[in-house]
Structures are given as C-alpha cells and as structure tokens.
Image (cartoon, rainbow, N blue to C red; front, side, top):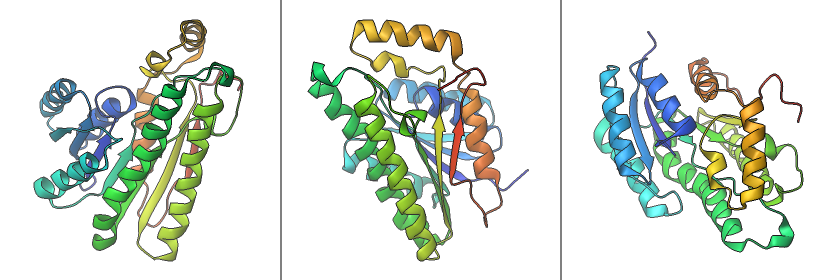
Length: 247
C-alpha cells in the first residue's frame, strides 16, 4: 500500500466529493472534509471510520475565504500537512442569458470560481513550505464546449481551466513540486442537476442525465489515479465522458 496522504476535499457532502473521500479512505488516506451541510459530513466521517479510515470535518462555505482558510488549518492542526486539496464544490443552474437570472450567475461565480481560488489560496502556503502537494480542480466538459443555456456555467468552468493552467506554470516556475490536475467530467450522476432553478431546463437535463450519465465512482477512480501517479509527473488535464455522450 502506498504511503497515506492527507487529503482535503471541499464539496465533500455528496457527489464526487463524497465518493472520492470514501475511495481514498480505503487506501488509508486521512480525509479533511468541508461542505455546508455539517450533518452530512458527520455521516460521511462515520462511514469512513467503518471503512478503516480517518476523517475530520468542518462546515465550510467555499464562498467565505475565512471558512476555507479554517478548513486548511484544521488539516494542519490535526494531521500536520496537506498533501492533496480537491476543489469539488460546484453548482450548475443553467438558463438562457435573456432570463437574466442574476442570483444564479452570482452563485456560480462565487462557488465555481471564487471557491476554487479560495481553496488554492488556502492550500498553497503549506504545500510550498513542505515542497510537495497536489491541487485537483473539478471543471466540466462545459469548460471545453459552450451551448445554449450553459453560457455562464461554461464561463465559470473555462475560468477554472485558465486558473489551473496558470497555477501549473507558476508552480513549475517556482520548482515547488506542487502538481496541478484539472478533471473535466461529462454527464455524471450527482446532485448537480438539483441546482437548476428553471423547471423546464431541469426536466430536460434530468432526462439527459438519466439516459447518459455515469456513476460518480468513475470520477473518484480518476481522481485516485491522478493522485497515485509518481510525484515527478502529473495528469494536468483530464476529460472523462460517458462512452455514449456525444458532446
């Protein structure tokens, strides 16, 4: 078994974050879980303990930089280091631009973009000091392809791609030994569709996901594979779609 790592996951209360936490726990990794729903984090931490793993958690709103910093400090106080930071929190309230759903726009920008930046900012000082680490950002196929309804969501995920590539170059320039990985999933069976506020759009998206989505475990497996790669190399950008998904 590989040496255990300390892994911090935002958006850990469901979906990709939860699945990844439970998969990594089986390898003996130490998990630090952050999300808004503290009751769910408590349940997941208990599940991880049943798997023989170890987990701590803190209610964390990724739009609040102080709370994200506190999550990083929890990892350091409990385990002494941060080996991997996974920015998994995200929402997808798709709509037509003409509908001017400003609240949805603001939340996507705050969670998808700012939440990713806050996670990077919280983890980097510790990783650069210890001269090792890995930042894993979850983007989307929508960060590669734009369509009607997805303009703002795609914009946030394109931003995550740009931020990740800039970070990769900065870490290489600094000779920090900090790896940067971007995961861009296609249709995955998570609760992401629940964040859509337009009922007609939500219904159509649910039907699409019903027909094409893959289990969330596929993304967890991909994340684990990227972590398990030898430290002198990194998967910088991974697109993973259902085999039957055309776009």
